[in-house]
Image (spheres, rainbow, N blue to C red):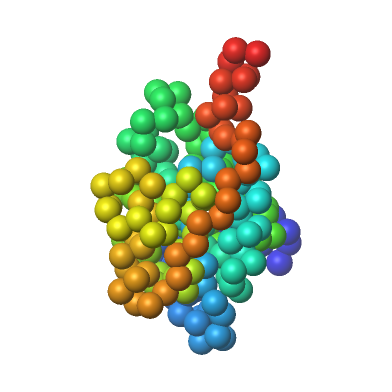
Length: 172
């Protein structure tokens, strides 16, 4: 398989993801899940993904679709890069085993379907937060708790965000 085919192979449909997860589970792999927009990749993203991958054997990344990003209030011009491009760039990262795009406002259904061994978010979220309406609540944490699985927050790398990068580009 060529490198280009390999990258494309890492982008998986929601329909094909359960079979992939099942194959990994048969092999005894520890599945880690994280999600986000990943619009303009920066050091903070790479740090999060590398640290998340270190928590298991296979990192599955839930990528917000363009439609989903527009519901998050990030601004009328977001995402900057379309979902197909964002998925392809993320497929090029060694830490990411699979990318699946979701259109819901949250990855709750994906998390319920995947049942990851570890659920990961950035440090601006709190695994101990149980109020699902709180801004720092980790979607899917209730599923993890009910299944005796782990939820982890990886510390944020200060000074890095796609929004700040876009503002810097627009305003110098």
